[in-house]
Length: 138
Image 1 (cartoon, helix red, strand yellow):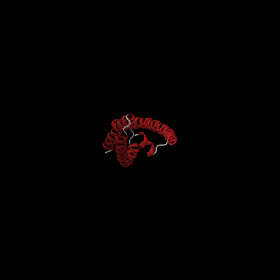
Image 2 (cartoon, one colour; image 1 turned 90 degrees about the horizontal axis):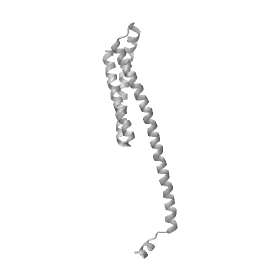
Image 3 (spheres, one colour; image 1 turned 120 degrees about the vertical axis):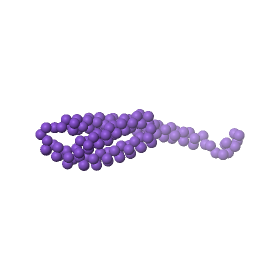
Image 4 (cartoon, one colour; image 1 turned 90 degrees about the vertical axis):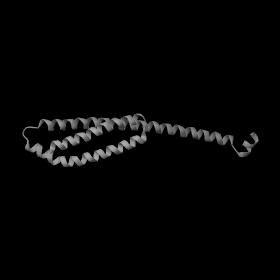
């Protein structure tokens, strides 16, 4: 039973790892809508893992307290899950930093455009465009 649940958990973590890689690609390509969908899918996987974790907790406590010698297959599954968790955590931190950087870049672009727009507005007011001016030039 414990081993089956750990295998399920490992499969979910493998899906999260693939999705995290996909999210990294979407961030790099500025695919915001696709990123939003992927983040939603990842949240669903996290909720499944949390539910599975609650089922696993008593089994793990029993395994730890009742076993003098550790089962190699169970220990291997636990280690694989740990490695994927650490890898995904690191990648998530990198993704968060990339998003913050891109957000900052976009904010700077908007600020520059706002400054240019203000400059153009001032010029337009100085020149004055009325319908009479346009009619005279036509």
